[in-house]
Length: 85
Image 1 (cartoon, rainbow, N blue to C red):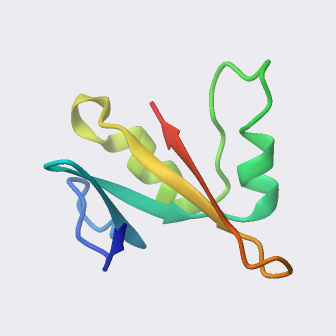
Image 2 (image 1 turned 60 degrees about the vertical axis):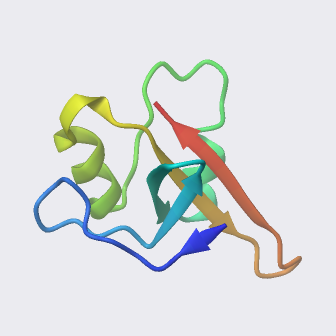
């Protein structure tokens, strides 16, 4: 499901992993639990990230390309994934 990181379409931003769905490849960025859960709130009109890498990608990506964020819970060992855009 996840492959190694790749250079994104934004100069200087490299994803933490790549999610392949069919022939499409989407960048995946690892975020903190606070960022992941905070952006799950239903009343949020816009996602907000403290991570410089994710914020820069979201602001500068061409064509408003979709991407994924993930949070890895160390206590349970589960990985949570969410599509953005």
